[in-house]
Amino acid sequence: MLAVIGGGVWHLSARSSDAGPSLAGLPQVVLDAHRGGTGDVREASISGSLALVKTGKIDVLDVDTQELADGTPVIMHDRTVERTTDGSGLVSSYTLARWKRLRIDVGTGPKNEHPPTAEEYLDALGGKAVLTVEAKNADSVPRLTKMIKDRHLQKSVLINTNQPTVAKKIHRLGILTHLWRNHLQFAHEDPKKFAAYVDVLDLAYDAGDDRIRAATQAGIPRVWTHTVNTAQLRDHMLTLGADGIITDYPLTLDSH
Image (cartoon, rainbow, N blue to C red; front, side, top):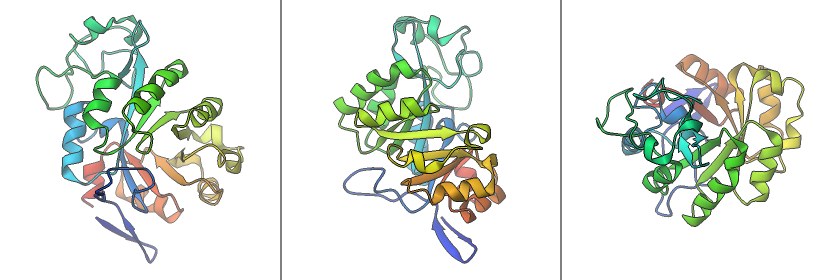
C-alpha cells in the first residue's frame, strides 16, 4: 500500500527478499502488528501470525513473553491467562505440561491451539518475518538470546524492553534492541543517549509532536510509534517522521 502524506510517499507493505527478512531490509516505513495483530487475528498465536505473514501486508510481528514456573518464556502479553485462554491464574504458576493443556479462546483459529512457547513461536515464524519479542521479565533475556542465536535469527529478531538498562544488556549480547517509552518516561529524556545501543526506539503516539520529531533526528536507526489504531493518527505520525506504525489492526490500517 502507498500512503501519500504531505507530498511524500510512504510504503506501508512488506517487501519480499530472497535473502530472507531482516531489520536492515525493511522498507522505509513499516507496519508492525502489535500483540500479533490482536485486532485482526487471534492474538499472539502461531495461526494468526502465519495468516498475517501470508497476506504480505505486514512487515513486523510484535509479541510479548512471560515466564512459566521453571523460567520457560511463553508468548503471552498479560501476567494472567484469563483474557486470552480457557484457563485462569498467573502465567508464572504454570508448568510446561499444564501450559500446553491451555487453549486459546479469543479470535478464530484452530480449536486445539495452545498459547505457544517462545521456542515454538520462533520455530514457526523465524525467517518468515521480522519479529520483535518483548521480555516482560528481564531475567528471560539470556534464554531468549540463546534461542535467537541457536536459530541464526540475529538479523531478524529483536528483543524488546521498557528498561534502558536492559536494552544496553541486549545490545551487549549481540541482539537487535527495541526500547519502548511511554509519554511520561520520554517527557524529559534526551533521545540521543539511546543512539549507541538502540536499533528501534518505540514511542507512545501521545509523547508529544516535538518530542517525536526530536527522536527521529537523534541518530537512532528507526523510530516507531504505538499504539496507532486509526488512519488519521497513522498519517499524523508519519508526518512527524516516524518510520514505523505499531497497530492492533494491521490489515485494517493497510486497507485505507
